[in-house]
Structure formats: C-alpha cells, structure tokens
Length: 74
Image (cartoon, rainbow, N blue to C red; front, side, top):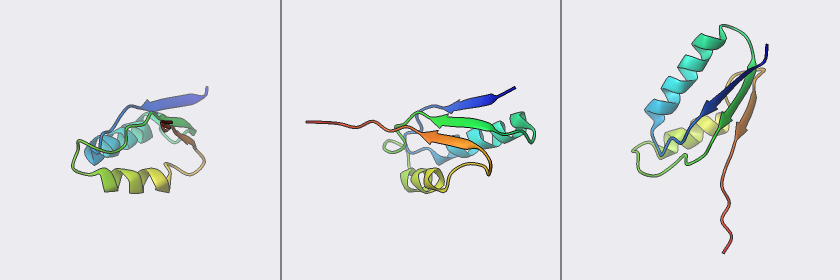
C-alpha cells in the first residue's frame, strides 16, 4: 500500500507544520510514502521563516516530498 499525505496551507504557522509532520510519522509507522505540501507557506502567522527553513530541509529520509508553489505572472 502506498501512503500519500497532503499538508494544507500553513500561512506562517510552524506549529501546524510541526504537528502535521508528527501525525504523519505516527500514522505511517515506519513505512515510506509521499507528502504533498499545498502552498501558502508564509504570511499571516508568526513563524514564516521557520516554516520555510523546515520545508527546505525536506521531510523524512526515503520519502518523496512535493512542495507546491504558486507562480504569478503579470
């Protein structure tokens, strides 16, 4: 069975990212899979820098990680 998890918009809330990662690790119980982060990583919340730093570090060894981002053209 392949595991896939989605992390929704974080808006600078490192606490939400930390909790999501912990819950994924608990649920996966040592298995590997894929994590997709939907975007809106910064603004509104107080910890945008921590969120970006953690996202850039990746998730778990052996996991596929897809941090999505929106692009704007003007």
